[in-house]
Image (cartoon, rainbow, N blue to C red; front, side):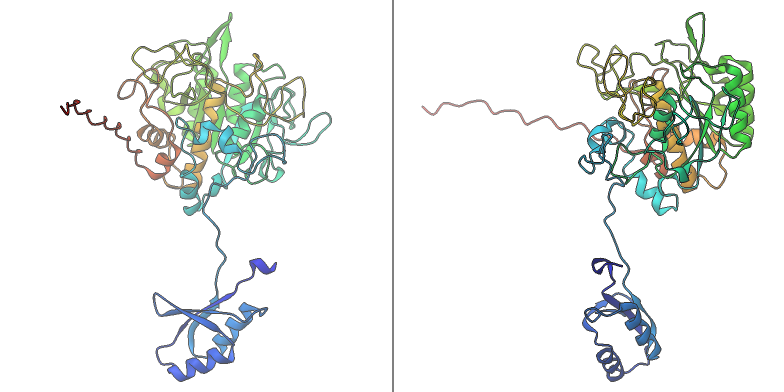
Length: 455
């Protein structure tokens, strides 16, 4: 242990029967100094310079005068968990992710910073121990042939998955979308690189159901859900929409997917799905309410994204980035103003497999926007909830969904509505179980007194 990390204090509680003279003799013999009296009749002493404080404490214990004696414990600041730079390099500014990830810590982010210490104190730091299945284009989880492992995907937090496109056990990502989603959920923290994942110690199960062009079939999605449930996934992310004759459809349109969702619900595995990006009002009704959590997308301004589907089946919204939708009466929506930022994560554009960076969208703007980006925010929040066991050891999908909805931040018209569902995901509130109080509007300035004449 380096000198700066060595314990320098010996902490003891003496027996009530020990005389002051005997205590003084033992302390002097151990060359202890600087006594500090603490609550509970505990005294802390400074150990001799260059001495082994643990050995000194053991010697004091052997003298038979103490109820116990030990060394002080190391402490550190309870700060945000990332020295991550916010760029695809280790040479950037430590903590730079906080400027880049408005979706986590901005005014209309998901308030994840105060959630992290709550999870840590509950024994579920960063979603540790929770397995998240990502049904997508695969994940950059390994070095194999032309594929490379993303620096945000530590190999120790990957469990075996499956490729339903290639029908093999190697769900490598040839598109970049799945890696982006997985990194939003569980990207590494404290690696002085890139961004921070919401559940930064959760385990990822990559399940490839879409090809290099981001296309697949409803059958593969249903197979993927069943596979994830049968192989130990505790929450499933599906940032996918169906389409027919160029019309976007919600994934619950397919009966085989509906059956798979009911299977997941029966096994207490929540499925989080993107609402879709066609700006349509047809997110289905709540017939499968507790089998799927449908997530719409909001912008950096707190408005519904112009592209986001909505409707009676939307459960809540989360950051997806991009331009505001025009919504009359919503003060957060300024569609004619400059668009807010996209969501940033480390991945790659599909034409450059393994060249990791913040990808650019079809308009050359850094980051990606869409309900595909919104859904993994909710999935990461669920991983923190499950790891912390604040809803018990094996909560139902309905209990998880209800907790998220009850603690969401209301947007738009008061109360639940088809645009925003229950409101904006609030991770800290979900872990606490209490809704974040709404800040009162600022008081108007006092009226200016009328001018008076002096003559």
